[in-house]
Length: 73
Image (cartoon, rainbow, N blue to C red):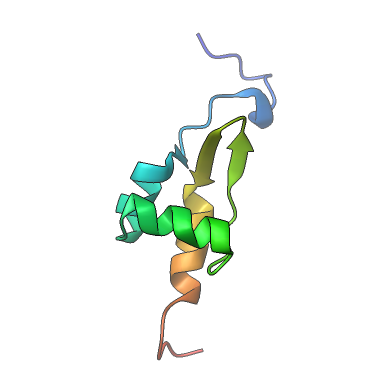
């Protein structure tokens, strides 16, 4: 049962991807995404919960849009 009075921050995040799912979403290997994160080659925003790394779908979409070459502005 869902409580409509619950703030959005306290509701389960269905648009969060783990490293493997995020890598698949943007079309790279999980290892590539790990290297980018560690070397700060591409600064894709992520959430760190203990050892777990999560990516918001919106952040991945924004990053993908920024990688577009030759788009009309």
